[in-house]
View (tube, rainbow, N blue to C red):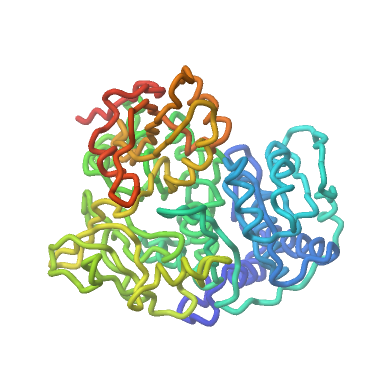
Amino acid sequence: MFSGLAEPSRWSLPAALAEHAAQQPNALWVTTTEGETLTFGQAAGDAARIAGWLEALGVERGDAVAVMMGSTLDFIRVWLGLQYRGAVGVLLNTELSGAFLEHQLANCGCAFAIADVTLAPRVVAAAPQAPALRRLAVVARPGAPAAAVAMGTLEAVPFTAWQQAAPVALVLPAGEDIACIMYTSGTSGPAKGVLMPYRHCALYGMGTLKSLELTVADRYYITLPLFHVNGLFMQLGATLLAGTVAIIRERFSATEWLNDVRRHGATVTNNLGALAAFVAATPPAANDHEHSLRVVQNAPNVPELERVFRERFGVPHVTSGFGMTEVNIPIWGRVGHSTPGAAGWVHEEHFEVIIADPETDLPVPRGGLGEILVRPKIAGGFMAGYHGMPEKTVEAWRNLWFHTGDAGIMDATGLVTFVDRLKDCIRRRGENIAANEVEFAVAGLPGVAEVAAFAVPSDLLGGEDELMLAVVAVPGSGFDPLAFAAAADALLPRFARPRYVEVVEALPKTATGKVQRAMLRKRGSANALDRGEPQRRVKTP
């Protein structure tokens, strides 16, 4: 276990890696389901060489470097190497393309990007809209032959050169220094870049240690992408602090979930959004209890799904939590306390949380519904703001509280239940989707006069939302909803592609012309084109 857990001045994941590399260099840290491995010593050595490579390329401390890679050992090397160099990793969702990717590359102001070979063409295509971006390193996929990528206006940088680079000694960062930028969507405008201090990044994993009672004997099975805080900081970061093993599957597979758990002796894992429902929907088997899992964290923790994991799979503990990229995880469940449907209790050592009237920011009585407001007790334990968007930072921080935009209830014991979103934000497959960002992307398609994006309920328990588009067609255009949806798919990330499309005569609006998405949500999808496959509902004993 990292020795600095009680000292906020030492809270950084590079510090934990350096300590484990010195004390147990040959101990296994990461293994992939494909059989690749990384010890603590190898991880530290590779990070030092990546840092040396970056230094030779002229990357300075504080420079932004975009990273668009899958959950591979090379991603981990690059992520750690950027921290060893003191550069800021801009960790991009691998589903991004088109205007979504252009905005994030332009907003972060990076001059250098690193991308998997399968993703590099998207970066090249977006580069003309990101004036600062000049160079790109292309990373070959493990076990696959290197492929040539047309670089367009970008200079090609050989990625494999890091292996011969002179290692750079780690200069431990200050906890308030910015470690990375992660983008998250809100209710209006394009995605916002969250400035993530080192202490903030470490605190995610510290919450995991406490909530799940993680020990060096645990083995953490990670299926969530490493460009997100859940996979990278709540899980992989927690194993780095604990000095225990992480098992990484690059892409979640419901059918392989239990096989992986058995084969690798996993004791802990997390499910986000619909993933728990996907696992529960697999056909029951007589040996479903034959595994070593002691705790599963589901967010949200749908009561029916908790019952499936406890009774069908025999997992002793099912917990949950609540948080955001901006505010860390201020609310955690606890091992040994079953709270189906609830998120958990406030992590009072490091955070304050109130449920407040969204109009006045005054606390509501216990048991009352209101907005979840959060603030940190530890400097650097929160985001440092939105990159290049000071007005959005100020908007979120009102009356000295961060406004999550989410509605919740806190009972007399302090147990917090997330109820719904106050925002016009769509939550699908673990991703926040800004409605107007989708609208902007598809508004120029042929035959579209007006379009509104909004959430409708998913068929899956815990599956959050499905995305629906209401379209006002140009008269006489012969608008075809199916052709429109296919064209929209080409412009949108996979998680933001619409399941439902409905042609409407007009969009409901306020007197000031604002689309009333609440009315569209209430209307629902009954008359819409449904492009989704029939979903299997969970069957419980």
